[in-house]
Length: 402
Image (tube, rainbow, N blue to C red):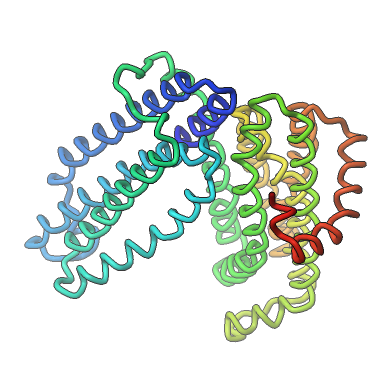
């Protein structure tokens, strides 16, 4: 529900300002709220699950009803308890060790896979498989709690530090965070339904596969966002706007250049990659590939910049506009698909980018104390210095990275 991101930002800002007591109150209040929601959710599932005919949904005999009930209970419990891990991971960020959190998260799927493989070695019952996933989550939660606690011992949960007044702030900003996944659902799943309705299943297959290949470029932006988010929280929270503005320029310039390069590479080799992936079962015209790639460049202009909003907990305005822009993109997808086919659907996502670029950049400059002229000049400076910095990084990484 966004509580983890909101509290992690707030804790990082408080610790950067030396307010250990305030950070502890944020952690304790958030853990109490999220854990309370999780327990209530688990109790609700336990109360309802036995009375739902799960076996009829998956076409299994009634004799397996109990197995499926326990499956749903274990799976839902794993989901609810996972909410707490996001909050506890915030201690890594507050300790300026966000890289450890990302490293730990990368091992979580492997832990799930190992325990599932062990369970499958003894049984193929669904409830045992679900229990293995719950067990992996509990192991991960224990490791996360232990390591994040060691990274910053002063930031520990305490019942006396729970403040009910914090709940209102967490709810307001946490709910605002839900506009982002909701907007993504509208943008990425909604337009598939529109294409299916207007153009049919063949167009859906072409649209979905081409978009998946093209949006692999967005993983670069996601990586950059994850890296700069914790640092921006600290810099903006401590009012170190000079460094925040420079970090913002470097990140935006880097993602834009990389996106342009990746778009050019896919423009040249994407058709061959697509044929290899689909085994030539679906034909992707070159001009259509270019139309799918075009929005990526516009997306790079604002997506990394938007981290300034989220890292400073000033994301409500962006959240509302993102949701509105995604809704308008669905309408645009319907209109453009009707008149221009898959080509129109491919370009419809530009609606989001064109609507958000002015607001996101203007607000990011305000939050970092930057101006348009300084931002553009700074971008040019960082781009010119990039080859030299890369060369120095290769030759002497310790000097550059400190």
